[in-house]
Every structure is written in structure tokens, then in C-alpha cells.
Length: 92
Image 1 (tube, one colour):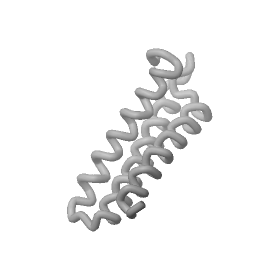
Image 2 (cartoon, one colour):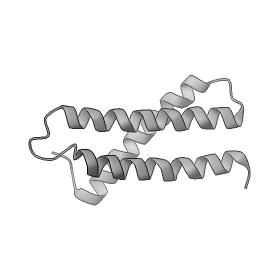
Image 3 (cartoon, helix red, strand yellow):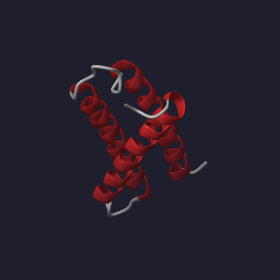
């Protein structure tokens, strides 16, 4: 397995793992969660995605590191919310 493929596989595992742990620790959509817990969950997922996007851009030796980080951050948040909806139903 080459470095790019390994990076993509580990990205999927890291995003799923961090999303699951962060979701169960923070309970962002629990009744009475307020704004702090959902905001913390979003921040954790955006940071995870951005770090993984940066890692992939470095592995691919790409010049658009910032763009990759932003795309992966948005993707990580979307995957986390989709995973929540699949496992627990619609938030709110």
C-alpha cells in the first residue's frame, strides 16, 4: 500500500473514531445541551478534518495545503453529522 492510500484509509478511520468518541463524550444534541457542547463538537470535527487534510496534502506533496485542510474539515463535519443521523436519527 502506498503512502497516499494509507493516508486516506487512516483518515476515514480517524474521522469515524474521533466523531464517535466526541459525540458520546460531548452529547452535542442532548436536551438542554445549550450552545457550548454542539460548538465544541463542531470544533473537534473541524480540527480533525483540517489536520487530516493537511496530512494528505503533505503526503501527496501538493501545493494547496490550505485548500485540502478546509475541504477535509468540511468533509469530516459532514461525515460526523451523517453518522449521527444514521445511528440516532435527526438531531434536535
